[in-house]
Amino acid sequence: MLSDKICVAVANYDFSDNADFISEKLGQHFPTVLIDASSPVPPKSPHLSIANTYYPGLWNAAVGHALDNGFEWLMFVASDLQLGDIDALCRHAVEATGYDQIGLYTPSVTPDSRCAFKSMFNRTTAGMRECGVAEGFFFLIRTSILKALHPLGPDRVYGWNVDVNTCREVYRQERIVVADDRIMIHHPDRRPDHAIDDDAAVDEAIRHGALELKEWLVAMRERCLRPAPTINPTAALDLGCGPHPQNNFGANALFGIDIREIDNPNIKRADLNIEPIPFADNAFDYVTASDFVEHVARLLYAPTQRFPFVELMNEIHRVLKPGGVFLSITPAYPDVKAFQDPTHVNFITENTFADYFCVSNLWAAMYGYSGRFRLLHQAWDDGKLITFLRAI
Picture (cartoon, rainbow, N blue to C red):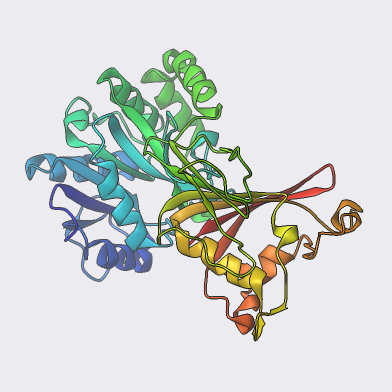
């Protein structure tokens, strides 16, 4: 068990196979209860079966279980979610419970998820950031906050706006709501056969203060859509930095590497064409390379055949923490800037990182590459290709 302070409640209606899977996986790390709301085909081993009382019934049962059994935290997980790397999710969730300012924690969500709150969408940070409002399909929350909200009354049929009220209660108790960009989960579209009376759900939300919450919700969205540092302290490494390393992500600790000897204890000398990155494994949340990778050779004989760019990508992955971000800004094909400098020896295209170094293809494995990245974002700016990769 990673922690006995956290109780997991997997809330299920009609996603029973996935509910069994999630319950089994999370149960390896935390005390876990699978709550089924009278599914047409129930899970194999539900711990608790209740009437089909929509979200409020599952919420009440989960919160009641956590409070009755004295847990400090409740992790509520809807059974239709695709959770991805569950082991990493659990490690980061335990980390979140160590921060006193955090009241509610949630993984960020994929860009194609069904999600009303844009601040929950995955960003190019390497940790937990304030998101203000989290939807109710996944949350890890202090049970001391839930005491003020439980139980939902019998007039809460559909439960719209429960998540917003919960998040406002977090702030009333002088804590914050955070999303973790190191972890992405996917929330699929609602199935047609699970349709509810949307008009009645809206009327219910209005009766329970949705209009009064609107001003607070708008202010919270504006506050949390602005760029913000992560809650957890971070460290960054800038490659080919010269005397002034760039701190693109506002990391708390900044280090650099340059081919020249520079009088700065945080900047180490190394020729990354032929030498490894002189830092320990899992040392950084961010690695940045601005106008650098185009100078790293693709092929050398020193004295035997080597692939320095592939080796560098291995090294970047090695020094990044799981969930860390690599940012590359480089002149790239077909722009003339990629070719006109006679010291450019590495010609990058839009497909280079995605095809050779990301989990979708990993074509560089044939050349000795052993890292694993996920492409987060790519864009062009004045002939330079800007690429964000996340280490996994």
